[in-house]
Structures are given as C-alpha cells and as structure tokens.
Image 1 (cartoon, one colour):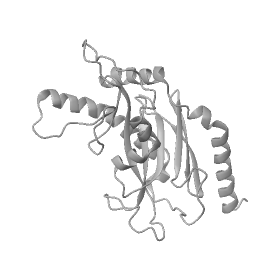
Image 2 (spheres, one colour):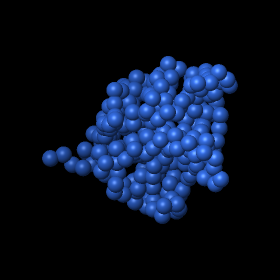
Image 3 (cartoon, helix red, strand yellow):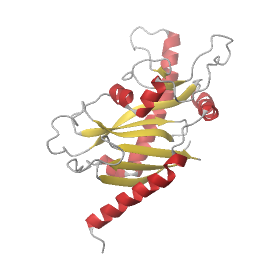
Image 4 (tube, one colour):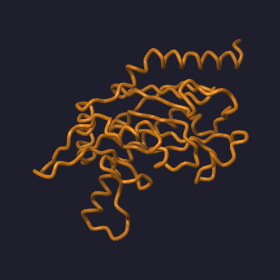
Length: 247
C-alpha cells in the first residue's frame, strides 16, 4: 500500500512534469485565425457576431484556511477561491486562472489576471475590426462576453441595465445571455464530472509557494472537445481531466 503522503508527492511531481513538458504546446495562445473560428461558431450557435469567448468566475468552496481572516469569505457566505475561465462555443476552456481570494469580485479577478492584462494591452492577437453581418459600416472589434459584474471595455461586452429597455436592447441582452451561459454550462459540466468540487476542499496554506508564484495557477487545453486541467494549489495539487461535452 502507498501512503497518503507518498501518493500526494507522486501526484504533485507528475503534475509538474506534465506542465514542464507540455505547457508550451497545450497553452499556446490562439492566433487570429483561431479567434475567427471561435467567433464563427458563436455566430452560428448564438447569433452573436464578433465574439471570441465567454468569461466568468466560479467560487470553489474550501474549508476556512487557518489565520486567513476574511480573505476567502465571499458574498455567498462561504469560503472559496475563484476559478476564472474563458470558454469557446463548444464548452471548452481556452484560459483558466485559479487562486484569487473569494472576497474579490469577478471584475477584480479579471483585472489582475494575465488574460485581463493581455486584453487591456491588446496582446491577444485578436482579428482586426470587421463589419457586422448585414452592415457595411462601422467596423466593430472582436469582444469577450461577460455579465454585469465586469466593466465595459472595447473588447469586453456586458448586458444593458435591466431598467427601461427598448425592444432592440432586450434582444441584445437575450443574445448576449445565450453566449454567456456557455461558460456557466462549462462550469456545471466540470463540477458534475468531478464531484469533489461540490464539497469543501481543504487547503494547506502554511507551506511553501508553488513554482507558479504567489497565487495558485491553473491551465487548460481544449482539442476536439476534450480538455485536460491541471490545478496546483500551493503545495497541494489536484490533477484531473475534463471532457468538454459539445452539443
């Protein structure tokens, strides 16, 4: 029989070896043509043009870490860290960041994430502005879709306020919600496939930092509807696979 501590060490070292060997291949940043392919699928399935992805955050329930104060206590009244993700129209994760304090808002997590900084600095190699279907002008940017918790930006779209909406704005909100629910469904697929995410996770925050830096990190890859996710949470690693269910 293998002891728990030995098994834990083996899992951690395996995760690190997989990351070192494969991260350059499985975490390659999409180029313009790939962004266009993602947008074409969103246009076909959700009737929302120029959409490069849906973004959102999910609170992963944890047991209260020792001497953590209220850092991990979220507005839902339990302790958690935030799983921030970007999904395509096939419920596949294109980017994941794990480890922000549960007390942080989704917009704050986004702003401090590598993805958020790259989007702000226009370093994601998004396609050039293009006109919307059925129009000749103006040329519109490619955007990521989020909920009301995120701030509106040139490449970040959120719904209109629900008060006094015209019919056109109601239709816009409806179609935007059709896109946004993709990432929520992806979170549901993940949690139902790996049911330990429905129960509080015990974290040991008193040990040394991981090689990824101060904040825990996560990475994912999607290929033909199949993804793999590696979560490294401080000194405790969880290794699991995601099968992204395409409709």
